[in-house]
Image 1 (cartoon, one colour):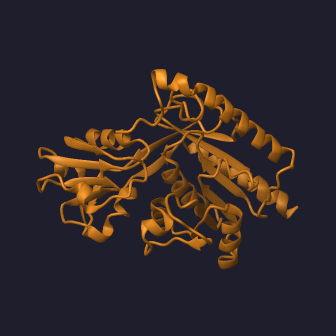
Image 2 (cartoon, one colour; image 1 turned 120 degrees about the vertical axis):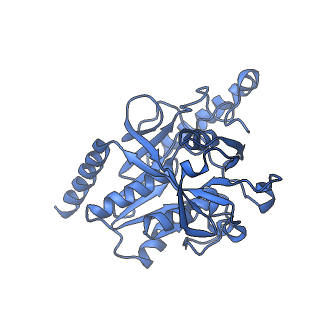
Image 3 (tube, rainbow, N blue to C red; image 1 turned 120 degrees about the horizontal axis):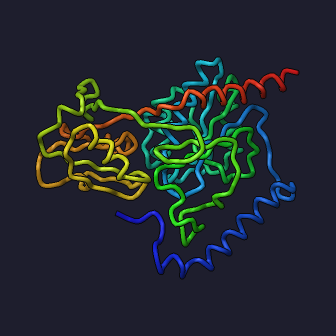
Length: 322
């Protein structure tokens, strides 16, 4: 498995470069704060879900939770994503019919699970404009990543931290930090991490067969047999531990985050069941095999988080109406 940050001597050798990177990040943020570099607000509330580190920390399940929560509160959310790994020349919608190579893996998952319009592209402002043209009823935007996209002014910033925390505490390239750990946000969500913030847990104990989503089985059905587990997410070990706690003795096969899977990657020389995450499954659905199984997970949030978010957005709605 690739380490998500450099350790030991290598980190210290790269530390001077990370100081240059830290200065560049601080200068860029200052220029936007002083309005020397232009930024723009789209005119409806913007909620950004991001992280201070490279690699996944659980942002996508949180975005899905937020969209479901907002719909229950009477909002009509739209979702904006970078579409990591895909070459997107112009803003476009991401749907469950798309290939991950064209729009990214997370946007397809977001489209399927959230039921909201999901649009992708590198320039978030252009993406938002296109989304709103196509869906004028959308009255709140949720960004999956984009904490460092300062061209877009936002109303709520939420940082997700997982059990790995901030690693060695260094900024890129010596460590995993995109911005200093001291960077302020409106709320911190802790995905299995300790600290001050709102707790989040990922729940899921039922799998479905990739070739027949109606065939669902509890994880306990796989106990007592050889099982392969693959994960190409930010922290594959998080998935392996989750499956292990469900009583499944597995053979772990970690891959880099956003790995572009091929059928050969899942050939292990036997017909044992292969378990995978939803995010990885969207890249393999064209070549699905009967022994491939998917484990969907759902975010469970501290109820106080919903209360906090609702108050923040209701305040924005009232101020706009005044």
